[in-house]
Image 1: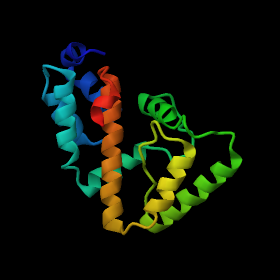
Image 2: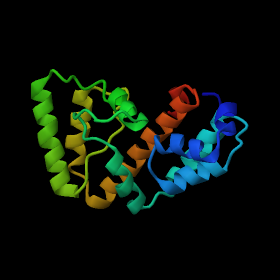
Image 3: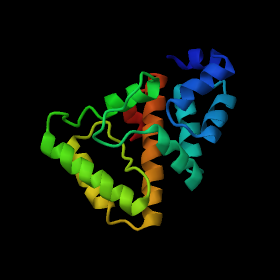
Amino acid sequence: MLIDEFNGLPDAEAAALLRTCVAIDSWVSTLAAGRPYVTAQDLLDVGRAQVVGWAPADVEAALADHPRIGERPVGGGASAAASRSEQAGVDAGDLDLAERLRAGNAAYEERFGRIYLVRAKGRSGEELLALLEQRLGNDPATELEVTRQQLGEIALLRLADLVGVDEGVLR
């Protein structure tokens, strides 16, 4: 979708599309209310600026929309489709990796009380597992900040996809 198309959407449709990027009401409403954007990069810049202000409660609530790493999301919505695509680097046929991810997810949830969230797009299953094992050593405050950053990366990549911007501009 081009930025002009996004700018021209009715408010409810724009908000629904933004919600598929991340389910944080303040982010969705700020980006929708900021229309019209001159360029897609302007939209991404506003989105990036909003990520910094996400409160822990925002992050925790948004995690409900994300599957565990290594588990295929269910449902036919845009968010589930994005998660399926983003986790394409996890080989569903690698039973050893699947078991190690399952055990790592369980250890993470035991330690931090929430799902392990990581930007999966462009990463292999082994990379995701290594990051999981590394992050298990974080203290809770550090890990919450890492989770916020990862959620922001996911949201911005999805937003870039939505408005047809090369994801390389985000890195």
